[in-house]
Figure 1: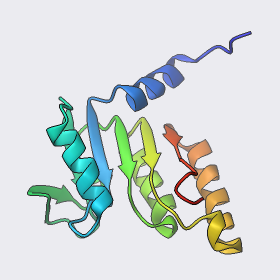
Figure 2 (figure 1 turned 90 degrees about the horizontal axis):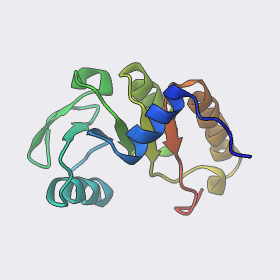
Figure 3 (figure 1 turned 45 degrees about the vertical axis):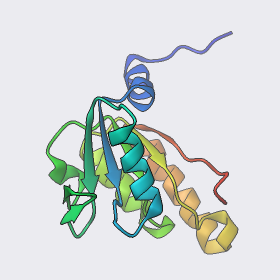
Figure 4 (figure 1 turned 90 degrees about the vertical axis):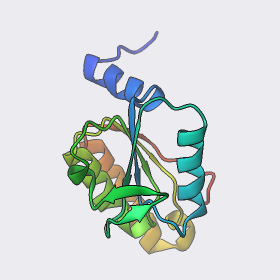
Length: 143
């Protein structure tokens, strides 16, 4: 028997699978992940808006970066989160405050780093459960 999907859940899943606006949280010139995600979106045919967030702001990948998701000042369907594990909770909270509907987290430093990392992963799960967005947190990268 298939489970029923609520209207808001369906919108969140659609935002994850067919976003019209994406924010890269933790965008940085130093990160190959940031460069790769940005290039894939901008050169790969994504037709929506791509916003960059770096807590220091500035220009990254030739584009102005906001200091927070809230500061983007536009609708966000999907956040691609590229910050270290210790900053995930704040990043997801910022996305939720900005009204983001979905998130993909690409990081390491959780359970594979011991008790503190496992606790961080548990806290992130709690933040995710209380947020108004769906997220995908792959564990193949080491967590």
